[in-house]
Length: 552
Image (cartoon, rainbow, N blue to C red; front, side, top):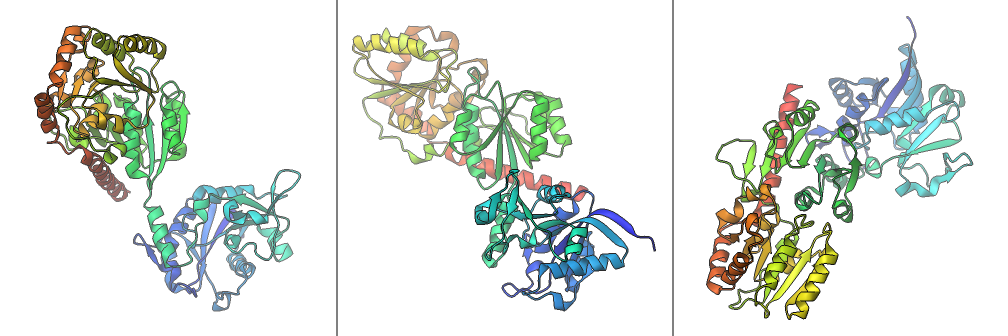
């Protein structure tokens, strides 16, 4: 019979018994036996044959069912005291008897169900003439066994406490192993991601692994600019808070990354791209389950490309041609009479940040004490100055105007000069910039003068009446402020009409006017929107995933 020499073999050690957990390797996690997860990853490793060595007929049968090969192991090699070297020798001899010869071997175990294909390929790749044995380890748990040699290579120093956990993740040259009847020294190591070396030691670990396996990989593509504002950034912060157990990657256009530090503040992984090719490369490397686009209008070709990669695509605030090809579209600021099972419109899907759940509006006062002026993170049309200029022509000296500027506001010097002049004229003004407690300022205000973007829904969630001035044509199309009856709208064409703004402010100074607007706002359950968004994304994604499995 002809001898077959191949490159790599992966050995999975999976005995039938375990002193701590009966039938450990066959324990179900998410309706799959523990063995399934390491076997599935191993079978994806390129240029490698995969064998499971076991004394259990059930394990060997399942291995074949899942596409792996088997090596029957004698009971004498299934004790807790059995050396891993003896199991390897038996497996290599078995393969030689079948006329299969391999250059490299990787040994793994089902007790590391999260060990990835990428890590296994790296372990094998690291083997060479100089490094004949590569152990997998976690620096977080085994930093006492590592020293760095002169060549700056990770060389492992073995002591009596070493290799308890990592002994079942090792790659080596087979000829060297057979020559020395053991692993060849010196030992080298590959540091593995901490989550990949989580092992099963007791029943609680089964639940932990199940939770981790439920994690989705979510790529969020979001833009923030002076013109666009920061509403999209804040909205994604609200949405992602409901997916904190998942693995999340934030991707921002290098020219549209205003507000990126907001993600960094909350320890999100964030990367920047210069063009579509770089974006697609980053997506390919991350290999997400879900892609969330919050970049305004998307194109048909862009979404179709994402769908060709079998990504589940969710778009926010998207009225572009690409919205017709996404799996899910959520437009909280828009309204449509056309019924589409993939598109969800209106304030029922508001993305209200957590901070707005912590504050309650003060009791409605007969007399107005505080008016808040805020036009988002950038205010590119300088509506703040326009409003203050109009107020300066009024006689409202007994009310505090709280002015909040965002992180992208560029005309601070001019604002400071204007406010200084107004203070000298006995106006009461408090200027704040880049405040992190907007909910507090809104809750303390008797009413707010603002634009007509995403902030409107957050203000409304606190039942605070508003004067809304759309900052651009896009904001003029947002219907909530008008439909809700909780705001008085001034067209952006009338922003220079001082008399109209002052008249509108005087109207809201009336207790009866504010009571009417507040009653209208109380009809809306805006804080529940984020829960509905999470529910619909998970429901539609699960349908999508099931469809993919059935197609395969």
